Image 1 (tube, rainbow, N blue to C red):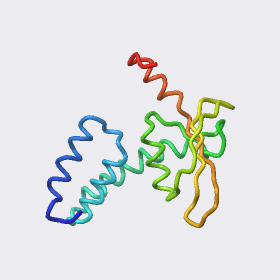
Image 2: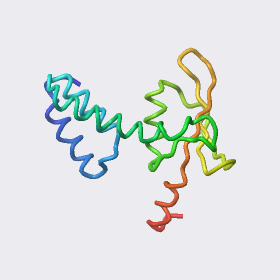
Image 3: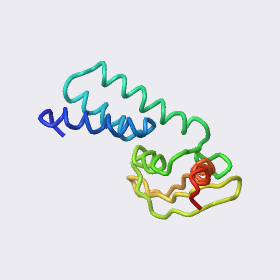
Length: 133
């Protein structure tokens, strides 16, 4: 991304947010775009929103077990958090010991193996409301 296409990026990303205001990636893209064009006010605004959304998940648990999993409302949130942690997904599975969780086995930048848990019951509640089985 550079300044030449920044207005188009802003326009498209705001359209995404008009559909799903909780999209952390869209807020991150806006924050980074505004930083590139020197709009510090909007950069700060979207940073606050992005990290507010992120903290609403990661401050509610430690992600180390299903019982202390990070609660999500969209599957995309799992992948956003893993990207923010700079880890590579090795294996994904379901764990129902202490809740309904996605268990994510990952590899860190220095090669260590870690596991993170995301509590997914609200995702499936949403599917039920939409009639998706």
